[in-house]
Length: 410
Image (cartoon, rainbow, N blue to C red; front, side, top):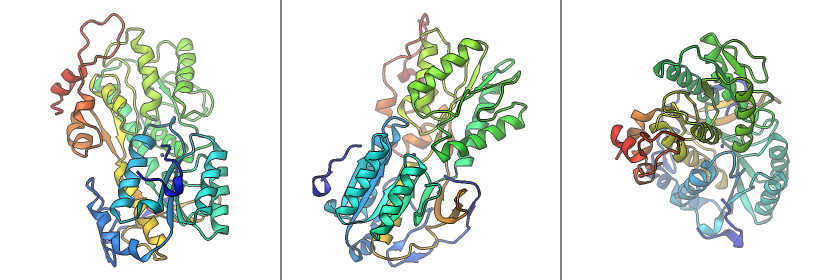
């Protein structure tokens, strides 16, 4: 990808109440564009070329980090680049950068984009304070902002694009309960982990979803809550840093060695814990884990029997929705109602933020071929290797290639 003005490419809701509107697909000057027309070959984006031609100035994409989820490097950056390029945006008008987990860096990137003449920022804020600062700077310069994946609580973005994140949490909870039954876990003692609920409103919403499901099945899940006979709640407020998640688990497991099911909020947090237990001889289908973000490692853990499933959020849909909004804003036009299919209530200001809210899917091993492989998100050649999980003392463990054959992944 060419860099805008030599800037380097360095390359993840819903707050409170939300409303999704049932609106029929409309045709705009740029063709038929709605929240349901985006596909994995990006053909809808070509309907926006006339809108792109009517606008001027750049679009700056600012992603938050490369640690909390591989998705920002593997999916978001390339998907956003493809979406905007397919819409006809010149490479010279596009900048995609990553803040690498540093608040000051995210603010600096935004300042650079604004100074370079960008008309629109697509931003995933590291936290609310950083997001508010950037949106205030943008407003002073007349630059529009699309909150991407995370809403800036207390912010002023013109639009917001994400998934129904309470529903994402609900899928995680349902997946955990289903897997506990399917794997025949006797006397389940569930360890409930969370993302960084102090800095990320999405993490709060995920927890609302899976806590509600777990509690409806007799558990007592609550962020920072006390434990019970069937539930161990993570001490503290959670993390999106995988190494810290492992440390938290190790502490809990040392105190509660009978933990036999783990609700993990994403694939990245689950992966080092699964690896840690495999080194202790953990057998497949014995301690179920959950996840989201549809990572390659996550799917290898799924097909080999160490993770129940993952919430697949088609980032290519989210990227196209954000790109479409940015293209309309760049041209000074109002996005069509069929694209902006809902609102999200900011819990801090009670402002109803116009939103594009997308639907996620729970994917288990039998569904891998028909979802992420079919959509081109994961390549079978990368998934179905001759490598085996490194399980201490287990000489019968099969390779990922054998697991793929079992689930007809090709």
